[in-house]
Amino acid sequence: MPYYRATGEIPRKRHVRFRGPAGGLYSEELMGEEGFVSDSSLLYHAHLPTAIVKSEGVDDVGAGGLQPNHPLLPRHFRTDDLPAGGDLVLGRQLLMANDDVRISFAAADAASSLYRNSAGDEAVYLRTGAATFESVYGSIEAGAGDYVIVPRGTIHRWLPAQGGVHALVVEARGHIRPPQRYLSRYGQFLEHAPYSERDLRGPDGPLLRDGEDVPVLVRTAAGLTRLTYARHPFDVVGWDGFLYPYAFNIADFEPIVKRTHAPPPVHQTFEGPNFVICSFCPRPLDFDPQAVPIPYSHHNVDSDEMMYYVAGDYSARKGSGVGLGSITLHPSGFTHGPQPGAVEAVIAGLAEGKTTTDETAVMIDTFRPLQLGPAGRQAEDPEYAWSWAKAAGADR
Image (cartoon, rainbow, N blue to C red; front, side):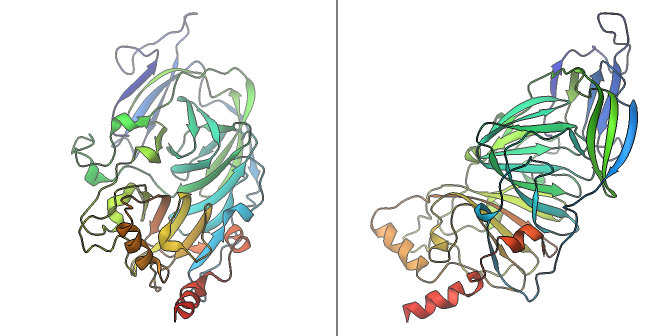
């Protein structure tokens, strides 16, 4: 995280004796990245965070089933066609993945068990609904449009509100952070960044829970394990540092506008290992008198592009079958762009007085090819790849 926070009770100095009301010492836990040379937080537990009484392997039913995108095709997935139910951990339905990232969809309506992803950070984007995110750091109230960034190793659980949530879950094989170019050498957001520290919501805390023999599901590179802790992990009386979960709402992203159409890097919101996450938000249309205010056809020669359409009216995709809740995958090796007729339609809209876009989408660009998961194949629209040709034929 780019700035320091302190919550609850902490001693004046680090690594000194810190006792509770009954006189017992609190137990320190340092959560740190990259072997003590990157961001960290120091948590103070009422009980030992190391005390486990049981460990058992758990079948990882969602781990496999990946297939290459072959023969090469652009893809369209309708997430609203996927089954609803379950929780935001075990209810994830794998859409696509590679060695750097797993991208899943969840239509969750149940509370999750306690969970720790020790394989990498997670970014969970809520398209609809609301949920309480509880963790050793405290709780975050999350709603539609929120990204919740969960650092690797954080014990947490998800509690959806009535009606459940639709969410996109991004699991990295490393860390998810604000782009380095938005930050000073000391980690402060710079003036040209499209969001700032004021837009980030950290946990309310401390969050204290009692309990004995408490199970926690742990993901590592080897798979899933259920560790049973002697005492509830949510016994942190205070913490401080730079590493903690936080929420950022897509509506707080400040779009960068040019006279002519700007490329996707201006929408970048986070970066991960060999991938980026971008936010496309309503913004003023390009304002040069001769501008073509819509994406041009482009070929991402080094990356696959996944787009999740979450709100508004995405004019470039009219006539393709893409709607709210849709996900498209445009792979390297395929040139993609607006549907036939979309450019002229937007130019006509300018003449009629339209001055802003009306669209919200989450984009993930990966720098290794994405393979298709079981949920992606299940929700695929088989006609999407031919939509440009069919629309062009109708125009002739």
